[in-house]
Length: 117
Length: 116
Figure 1: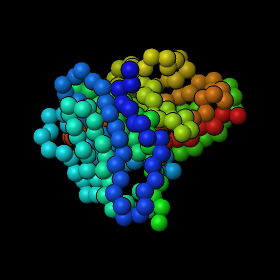
Figure 2: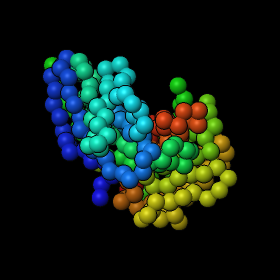
Figure 3: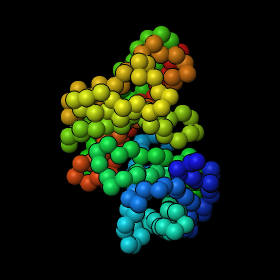
Figure 4: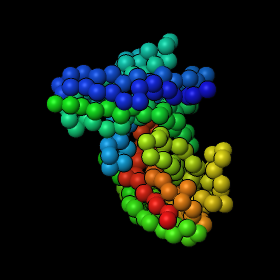
């Protein structure tokens, strides 16, 4: 079974509008972390936001917020006030365990977001 | 923030030759680094975990004799693609966790390998 599922291969959004990128995960470990990364065409992986499984509140970082619904095992990324520079691939990832140097990230297949004027 | 560098950023080599890719943590020490491979329009697939002072841990299906990993110091890990073939052409990315904040991994800018 897929550990991380991103069902939207591509999304379009108009500039200044909000957009939600979906991510569901599967784990039996009570301790885990969820990440979102942005990958522009240059290839670099840019860390956006992190949500721990025990965090009581949804994570927010500027225009990025994570809609964490633990019972549904979903961790959707919400980008508010989209900008043309937000056009990129977006990956959801999960780390199982409480977090140690050997904990690896498992990535979803990604969503390509295109922001149009 | 912490920076991870990779060298070279791109490389073209002939089939049958070996290529070494370096991953350096510039302002922090990394006892563990991760190597990923990303084919065009696909996700990142973890190849192996590089451990300073011990052998690398390879993911299932990754040939350890083909992809040699050496974690030479607390700031350097190298991936050597031996006897490269065109199907090894890919984007290779390394990452290192921030020991001060395990909620974050820092990724290198990636190395694009083309085998002709």
